Amino acid sequence: MVPAPPMPRVFSGIKPSGEMHLGNYLGAVRQWAAQQDDHDALYCVVDLHAMTEPFDAAGLGAATRQTGTALLAAGLDPARCILFVQSHVAAHTELTWILNCVATFGELRRMTQFKEKGKGQESVSVGLFDYPVLMAADILLYDTDEVPVGDDQRQHLELTRDVAARFNHRFGDTLVVPKATVPPVAARVMDLQDPTSKMSKSIDSPQGTVLMLDPPDVVMKKIKAAVTDSGTDVRYDPAGKPGVSNLLEIYAAATDGDVAEAAAEFDGQGYGAFKGAVADAVIALLGPVRERYAALAADPGEVDRQLEQGAEKARAIAGPVLERARRAVGLLPPV
Image 1 (spheres, one colour):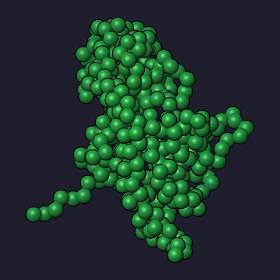
Image 2 (cartoon, helix red, strand yellow):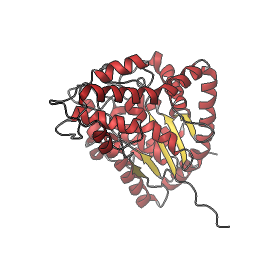
Image 3 (tube, one colour):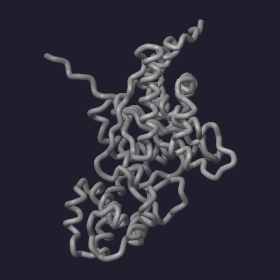
Image 4 (cartoon, helix red, strand yellow):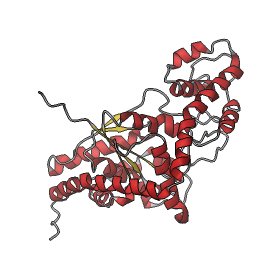
């Protein structure tokens, strides 16, 4: 019998910088859960990335646990994937320093996210500037084949590929050069009150952001209050009707449908019926997640245990990769 080819390894992470929202779930986490059976999957709560912007030291640990709990509730299964906390694997920071000596100042200075987040600030942390190199280390440390990314992370993934290729050119074939994968629907869920901006955990737009744990009445209220556009026709036109188009993408993703079919389904029904149907679909989608979260949150010690088990597995993979990189650049091995 011919052995089956190895499953591609996939890696992704999420910052514990606020409650997870519908955009996180539809644009990333639900796809992560679906990949567990046909990928060698590693998922990470990237708490070190959360430190690159002003943060609450007293609440960082609790936020990290909360995010891990939410990922478990959303369907990540430690029996089918590796789920861990970034800072629990020290190799992330050591590989970052090695890659810092391969990446260039010009590359990091051109990163759009750094320019946007640092705009107008007199003092910006070096961590925010160096964020993409830490992200590259996160990915390259696990011989990752595929990285599911949204539109806002494409540039960082390209930097990761460039740094890995440059490292291999200088020091020999050492690091796997990953490729990006993007979910076909709702890769970028927009703010319900400002459909020209992405739904975000960090931007203060409570009415424009549906949280993954929002109760049904809150979900209904937020979606019914969503900004639409002039006219009453429901059609997919991101440029001319960004509000309606965002809701169509949400509905299609929540019902595992197609945007064009969704537009045809609500043709001639007006915004009221359309928004109600979108809200019902989102409530049905998030209900089981909210129930699982409540059960997991009641036993935080068990959540911590599962995250530590994941870190043990992650360290077993990361260690040999880091050692390869150390040997390649000529570092003296420890005695």
